[in-house]
Image (tube, rainbow, N blue to C red):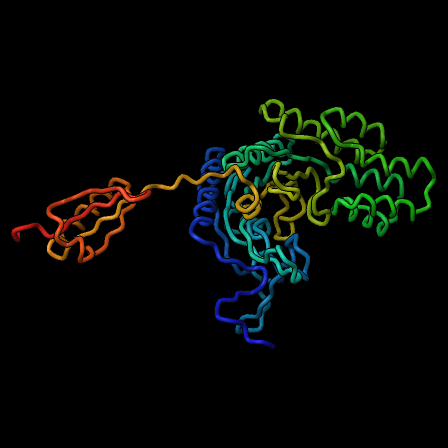
Length: 397
């Protein structure tokens, strides 16, 4: 194996230059402040967790987890999301707090990837979890907060696609009952937006024309509130009907929030079907084809930590916003540079401290020799920086 060069880093990891860090911190600060205004308190969990607890409960497939052993031989993982670690804390340290719990976070997560260009093994997420409320109001709250958070992050043009796992589960069980492998294959096609593959999977089932049409009709269930009516006409399943009723109730609450213009119902949008149990959603920025946020209801997760509670939430895909959304503008704060001669060092550094106390960015440096004869205290502007010179005073004063 070739030894890496000194400037190389592992594939999938990146360095963040000062300008990019400014964008990251702006998003982190503005979004967390937005979440706080909605009543969400920030939580921080460890970077490393036990594989047998958080690792197993995670939504990330086992092959994408970064695993390591501690000195006792216990398998650990680098966190691959924040939802499972927060579920662990809610089920232990926060078990006596009144429900519902509203928690927010900003942190880096890790997922092992194939060596593909453009894929990241470490990235940042900013999100929330709302625990202990299974109502449409709770699901609508996290969608509305996702919209507010995208706006706080500087994303001006986007759409939220909202679906429901229960509708698809009910319809598939109605049309191809008991065929779990075939149902999973169809879900894989929808999850990957591979509609050609989805239709090919339907063809391979050799269904009656009416059954085939009902499965293909899912691809047309995308639009406004009228989709609820079309969905109910497609399935008589009690699970599907209950799911659509919940989804449409969520949409009505979003209308009351005044944000429904950002939302469309898309029943092909199912999220990670091994993880979510109800309403799911994804947010797409105008500049990007991949989602900049995702979330949904996951009512089965907390019981893996011994506390059966409903929960819903979302995460912004912060790296995609940083790299792909062009509307983000960082206001570069003009700095002050103070140059001084050795004789006036104390005077200059005292002025630097005063300006910093007023919120100014100040850089100090010893005056170059060619400027050393400047008398008194001068001030000039160079590019985006004001320069204050404390030179040697003439006459030895």
